[in-house]
Length: 533
Image (tube, rainbow, N blue to C red; front, side, top):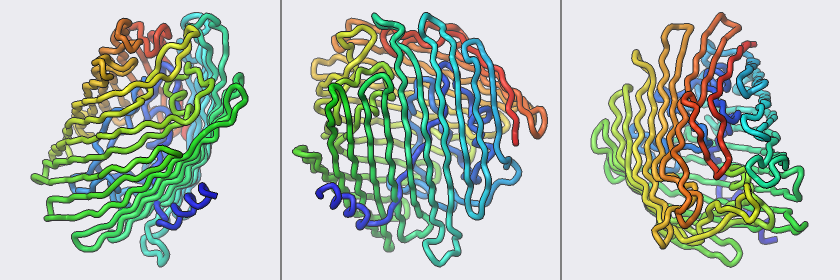
């Protein structure tokens, strides 16, 4: 009854929507660029003028990117007005879909397909991805399949009912098969199955009232083990603006239903609520203040919240935020980070970031380039981290108290005559009370991608990922070698229907390790063709 009331309370607060990100299809060791695989330039709603690249590294971790829009000077809640997201279809680049296939040194084969059909005020898409990777060391072979569908629909901006509202419904399901090739039983198989249903309703068109609602349900299971998790998430937030003053409400309800070894049903839930009041002190300064309240069983949390933004000039903006909050994840969250995690007896994981703040400054020169950098800090008790299991080649979650200090910088050079460049660097000082660094958390993270259009038909990209200062144990006695992956992507447009592509990864054939004893893919390449429907 309590959960039912909480769910209904969220719905009553307001109809709001939450931003959802689609996972890109990944192939271990081969990560093709958007213009080769994902088809985002093929079927799309016209993007904003200033593109924030969704670059995902080969280690499946999103580095920090600019989060704010200086010209709008929004703080956290809603980054861009809907008029920049919803426009007319760009008919110049519109196709009904594509079929992309390739063969490589270890990828044999790789297939990616998308079919889309525009409807009145929307787009319907069907997607499929599949790969089969040969072994590069004994028992390192891997395969994966994923299929899904999504519908994007928006109401007209002159509609009498909720003009400019965007509705996005999506569903996907897939499986990832691999072996514990660095364990005492290297032929042991695991088939990790994951599905997701998501509904988003968002409106940022009305300058005085913005709302955002999301329903997200994720299921995760392991075929060979008695593990099933259902992760339900309901989020809602709204913002009401009057002159220089605004009132915001955000609510977040999560529920984990977990069936685990030895045939025990576990899982918890959490409710997070944040009311805020915002002020626009002048045309160049904003502030938002409130509290974060949560309850998860006996774990209660109450902490102030504050964010400020100051536009120092047309090009320079300063941001600051204090955002202490509880964190609440299911085992599947960590399993997707480390596929060799032993999930026996794991239930919902709760910990608190009792202190968390960030300051950053952003400089943007017209439409040419953008630089932003700053500092993040938080402290947390019972912070989960990956540790060796008593079984070789498997990992468990351990806990410790930590502090984290992370200066960072990002550089974005927009598309122009000299190409497009994005780079990110972060120093990560994540340590426990004994000043030991948390295992598998790098002290330094660097990534970069540079793309250049040699001609109307030929595009090339150079990308790099680098990790340094990682340990495999909490005592910091086992240090991992630096991780370095340099890759090249080439795409040739043969005609309106056919593209030819080539991708190269780990060009220097470095022995990279993300997890102790589990070597990543060595020098790899993939050649293929893309047929546009």
